[in-house]
Length: 157
Image (cartoon, rainbow, N blue to C red; front, side):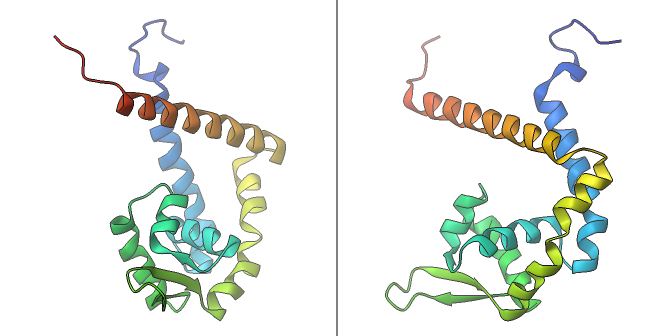
């Protein structure tokens, strides 16, 4: 039975997103374990498989994270021999992350991950694409709201 109370926990988008996020990350674990990577590492590799090298700050922007949060994750990937970090020769402040040959080779094994996840979830690719589009819409709306908040002045009491 669905509650009509607007403050019901089960009606909150934030609650559903939190539970969905934890559940999806947990569902990825048995798929990514054979690859020897975690879900956050998978996200970094996905970004680098699209384009490399990327400055750590660019990588953080693409992943909607802070560079200091991402740095230890990239260091662990480097220790595993999947990526390397180098200072840009033209701008020493710019730390660039690129794939090693092992990191590039891992892509072939990872190509099965999306289909395996769709199968595990028992959802069609079309339905997952619909959910993805809805999530992107929600992300854009929340970012727009944050931008609006940052542009407004505090209200007087």
